[in-house]
Amino acid sequence: MGYPIPSLEKPFGVKLWPLFDEAVTRISSGKVVPSDFEFVAGETFMSTLPPVAFLIGFYYLVVFGGRALIRRFQWPALVLNGLFQIHNFFLTSLSLTLLVLLIDQLVPMISQHGLYFAICSTSAWTQPMITLYYLNYLTKFVEFIDTVFLVVKQKKLTFLHTYHHGATALLCYTQLNGVTSISWVPISLNLGVHVVMYWYYFLAARGIRVWWKEWVTRFQIIQFILDLGFVYFATLQKIIHTYYPELPHCGDCAGTMLAAYSGCAILSSYLVLFIAFYIEVYKKKGSKKAKVLKRVPGGVANKVNEYVLLDSAHLATGFDSNSGSPLPPKNRRKA
Image (cartoon, rainbow, N blue to C red; front, side):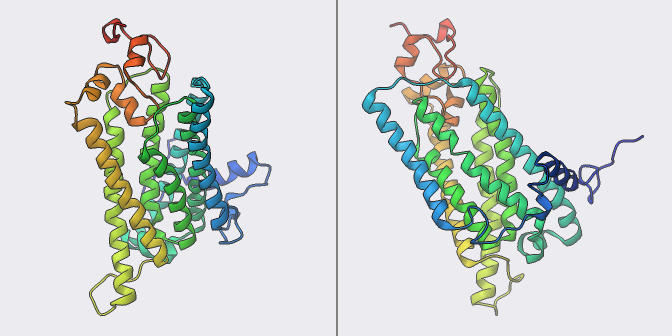
């Protein structure tokens, strides 16, 4: 018996969607059937703005209110390293599963109908794709837990981190309701980045150092550059088709104008913020803080993933502030 041979019709040798559909149906005893899912704006769970706005607002309330309470009552920092590892392993596994299922749908679609069809045609808004988009949307709220770990562990919070989580949930909401066929571009790229990013966080929590830590941020920047190339193109086609049809263009692109503008604005802000973050962390190495980060094993990486705050007090203790493990003698600072 030979192994399945990958092809453009079956990029993994077998069609994965039927297997996924059957597995979820059996596990849920028929209560959840992916192939029967329908996203109905105003009816499907989390398809209206009020609950989305409430959860995003509650997220920021927990983050900033929690930090204020911790400072007010001087509660000790929690380690939670085991839960942190489980959280990151779960998200890297979930991201990989959704990415593979998306590729299973995308490769035959693009090979048969072309790239423009996949990003602009209403026919590209298929039932399996909608289901995967919706599952990805729900994971954005699970990812709020990232920041909860930062708060209870009393680590540094950056504007980029807190803004990014809330804005991404809102972005997914606008694209689902806006029926944007191009959604697979930012979603698949983001899932690919998250596979690497959460796997790195998992390894870092286990005290495992990797050489590619700087590439986590680089991948994020590359992701947004590619996102914007596609999204700007699709938005331009829609604007020309709607308001200036006499000008040369490829045709209309599926989705509402609000969804197009929202996607351009939020993704553009990500690119600017991540580039600024990368320059500050990796290019300004002459500063005293950067030198301290470089001297500590995993220091720069820990600043990138934002789960660690290193300062002179941490160095004086002789212990890594993330794992709690002793630092090598050469990296300790004499009290």
